[in-house]
Image (cartoon, rainbow, N blue to C red; front, top):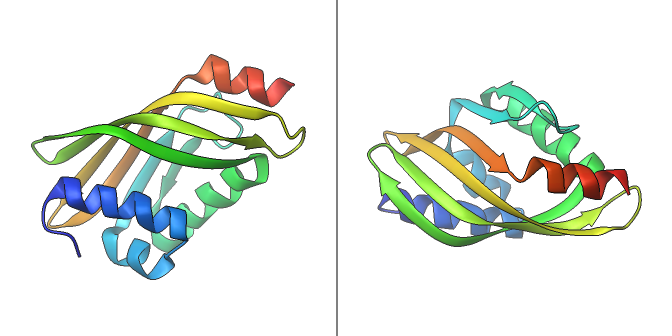
Length: 130
C-alpha cells in the first residue's frame, strides 16, 4: 500500500484504470461511503465495501464508460482533494463527454473512508440527454 495519502489516492486511480480489484479492496475501509449528487442517474449515498461500492459502480457503468484523470491533488488533513476530468462515452448514445470534476477523498488509518465527487452536473446531464 502507498505511503502518503496522496500516493494512496494516485495509486487508487491507477488501480481503477487497471480494474485491479485486489488493490481497490485493500485501499477501502469496509464502512467506506460514496456520495454523488442525486441529480445524476447513478447518484445517491452508498455505504460499505463491497456492497455499496459495487452498487455505485454497477449503476455508473450502466450509464457511462468513463475514465477519471487526475490533473492536480492536495492533501488537507485527513483528506485529499483531486481536481481533474472524467472523459468517456454515454452508453445509450455513444456521445463522448469531457467533464471537469473535483473529488474529496477522506482517509483514516491508511484506508479510504469517504469519496465525494463534485462533477459539472449540467454538462453531464446534457451529455446523458443527447
